[in-house]
Image (cartoon, rainbow, N blue to C red; front, top):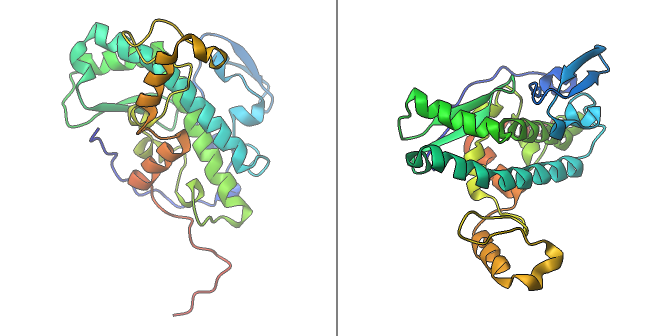
Length: 260
């Protein structure tokens, strides 16, 4: 895919003072309610995203979780998205086969709203709505919000109280405001490996075969191995996007005196 996000200069902010509001909020979905213990309010949250408060809002306690926790969360979310994305592809093909060949992508804005992005191909308003509708019907908006918050949280954890990092996500300016310029969901799905029990799509095989049933359908795992051969693990795929569209901002060690 050839789509690239626009580069936007962001106002520098003191990361050590980030509040819970810096995380992208999950928008109401499926009418399941949880209680916001900070504001004593009840709100709707998608059932798949009902987590411990610190996981639902990763910047609430900035350094209470280590980078490995966020990396694991990021990997699980990406694999789960990839599971669902096969259905997205099939639903889109059934509605409008031309969309499978067109250059487009999706991300989320700072309010957690799904954005459909044009690439080199012009999309009509109807096509934009078709894509957005299928993505939302398959909960890709909620998955993308969850993924974005994991990336933001990982950046904070990588930098720590020193506010710098020499590698990884912590180097980049990843906030809810910059996320829509960096994260591309369709690109991530295209780049990522699938799990061993993943259905690749109609025509490959008819049912999920679990890891403990490998001998039952060796052709299944041959297909998975072939598909995954040139694909990336989730963290590698995310770093590809950061290096392509992210701004390196926190890679200068403040404890080192630079002499001219």
